[in-house]
Length: 75
Image 1 (tube, rainbow, N blue to C red):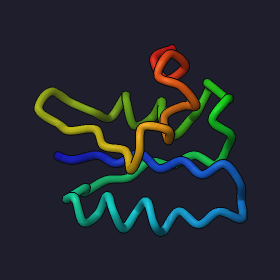
Image 2 (image 1 turned 180 degrees about the vertical axis):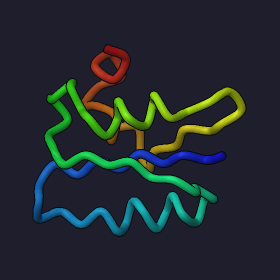
Image 3 (image 1 turned 135 degrees about the vertical axis):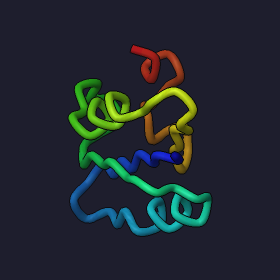
Image 4 (image 1 turned 90 degrees about the horizontal axis):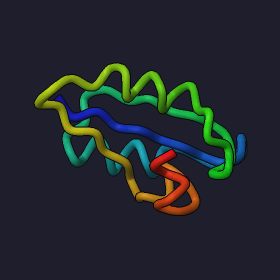
Protein backbone atom coordinates (compact mmCIF):
# COMPACT_ATOMS: atom_id res chain seq x y z
CA UNK A 1 0.00 0.00 0.00
CA UNK A 2 1.17 3.53 -0.75
CA UNK A 3 0.72 5.87 2.21
CA UNK A 4 0.93 9.64 1.80
CA UNK A 5 1.87 12.30 4.34
CA UNK A 6 0.70 15.89 3.85
CA UNK A 7 1.89 18.87 5.88
CA UNK A 8 0.82 22.46 5.49
CA UNK A 9 2.30 25.13 7.71
CA UNK A 10 -0.74 27.41 7.88
CA UNK A 11 -4.48 26.94 8.00
CA UNK A 12 -4.72 29.15 4.90
CA UNK A 13 -2.53 26.82 2.84
CA UNK A 14 -4.39 24.37 0.68
CA UNK A 15 -3.41 20.73 0.98
CA UNK A 16 -5.15 19.86 -2.32
CA UNK A 17 -1.95 20.27 -4.37
CA UNK A 18 -0.11 17.74 -2.21
CA UNK A 19 -3.09 15.36 -1.98
CA UNK A 20 -3.64 15.45 -5.77
CA UNK A 21 0.03 14.68 -6.47
CA UNK A 22 0.06 11.82 -3.96
CA UNK A 23 -3.21 10.46 -5.35
CA UNK A 24 -1.78 10.55 -8.86
CA UNK A 25 1.25 8.61 -7.55
CA UNK A 26 -1.11 5.91 -6.31
CA UNK A 27 -1.52 6.69 -2.60
CA UNK A 28 -4.47 4.94 -1.02
CA UNK A 29 -4.28 6.38 2.52
CA UNK A 30 -3.32 9.85 3.73
CA UNK A 31 -2.23 11.43 6.98
CA UNK A 32 -1.80 15.16 7.50
CA UNK A 33 -0.64 17.86 9.87
CA UNK A 34 -1.10 21.62 9.93
CA UNK A 35 1.96 23.09 11.61
CA UNK A 36 5.36 24.62 10.88
CA UNK A 37 8.31 22.60 9.68
CA UNK A 38 10.24 23.40 12.84
CA UNK A 39 7.77 21.47 15.02
CA UNK A 40 9.04 17.92 15.47
CA UNK A 41 6.09 16.40 17.31
CA UNK A 42 3.47 15.79 14.65
CA UNK A 43 0.47 13.61 15.40
CA UNK A 44 -0.30 12.90 11.74
CA UNK A 45 3.27 11.89 10.96
CA UNK A 46 3.44 9.67 14.03
CA UNK A 47 0.15 8.00 13.02
CA UNK A 48 1.41 7.49 9.46
CA UNK A 49 4.66 5.89 10.59
CA UNK A 50 2.77 3.62 13.00
CA UNK A 51 0.41 2.61 10.17
CA UNK A 52 3.17 1.66 7.69
CA UNK A 53 3.81 -2.08 7.38
CA UNK A 54 6.59 -4.04 5.64
CA UNK A 55 6.10 -3.74 1.91
CA UNK A 56 4.28 -0.39 2.14
CA UNK A 57 5.62 2.76 0.53
CA UNK A 58 5.65 6.01 2.54
CA UNK A 59 5.39 9.06 0.29
CA UNK A 60 5.57 12.84 0.63
CA UNK A 61 5.04 15.49 -2.02
CA UNK A 62 8.45 17.05 -1.27
CA UNK A 63 11.08 16.21 1.34
CA UNK A 64 10.55 19.59 3.00
CA UNK A 65 7.11 18.34 4.10
CA UNK A 66 8.96 16.19 6.65
CA UNK A 67 11.06 19.04 8.05
CA UNK A 68 13.07 22.11 7.23
CA UNK A 69 16.30 20.15 6.90
CA UNK A 70 17.29 16.54 6.34
CA UNK A 71 18.90 16.52 9.78
CA UNK A 72 15.67 17.75 11.38
CA UNK A 73 13.62 15.23 9.42
CA UNK A 74 15.46 12.33 10.97
CA UNK A 75 14.90 13.38 14.56
